[in-house]
Length: 471
Ligand code: PA5
Picture 1 (cartoon, rainbow, N blue to C red):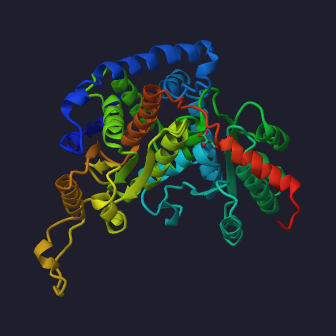
Picture 2 (cartoon, helix red, strand yellow):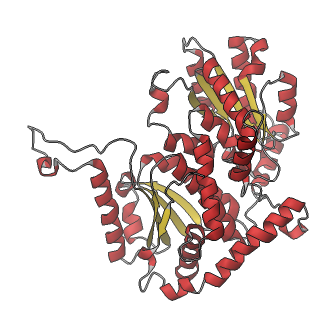
């Protein structure tokens, strides 16, 4: 296991009166948090592993918890035939064969990959030449909507390129029957066939799906040479460290081993660190107490870098779909600063007192700090700040915002990331998945499954099949 720096959590900005909480309330959570952790590590994992899950605890998709260790162990034992080995081999094969990959999937079947791309690949990744991308393909996302113009926009874009290499499809659906993804697959498959001919489809279409289902059947019919399983017992939004997230990540050149090592390191920390210095337990306890004691039902994930916007959207989905049940669950909201200081901050500063701001802050940046610089035109008055760099300005904005919120008795916390890289993202994503399960167990909501979402699907299908076409 690499000795990378751990992410950290600082909740000092919530301990005040009258709209925060006090440290005694936090300390009093220790027993309950330890009990919940023990339940997850013992009861949940035991029931999951033995398959003996009582009816009132189903579904129990606890398979994500030890997935990073399982993937790494299998890879270290047998590099070639392990799942991670196959992912890397397929990624390498596709990198040589194509210059664009369309990832089809919705919800948990694509949001993790997009979050990893924005955080771990260089900004504007797709815009660079093939050489500047290190020979890795451009990545596009579809099948996450039924938007007539954006679907055709991408089909047109693919059609009008005069690339030497073809494009390919990675289609991801655990159930294999989600209408948005299935529709896009049919349309993009037709376009790919028109371009390369039916005989090349088996090598250029990579399905990631369950053992059975409509997509599995299609993969058989096409004769796909590489395909991957969404493991049983791993739910969509918890599947980023399965082929669902790892295959697209490997395609775009992300170091998936370091990513998994980060997640495994976080697992160790979760198991061993005491309440009060446990990033998962502390994060849950603080967010829970602010909701319970102060009515902070809106949780703002305030990312102080553009690179984490999609990570925020991934977490919005994770929290909303997992805990938004039985008339419970906080409302997650992602903001990106300093951008959104100019759109949302007024409300966060002086609006309803129903918000907790969880800042996510970087300790280091991909590129060297860029100074403001001297200029012959000092009409803007910035020569005073010529030596100041963008990270320094960002830091001042973050600290200044926290101070301003504190002056108005608005609670804030800080999650610190050593960098926006594989190690930190592996830790952060595993931390947020564990935190979601811990909170679910704490408030008595099953974090797995999404029974409510089925209702729109039933209605949509009925309307499509029964209504006259003009409606
Ligand atoms: O978290 C979940 O389970 C959902 O968001 C699913 O990922 C989403 O509905 C897509 O499902 P599927 O992968 O079966 O197409």
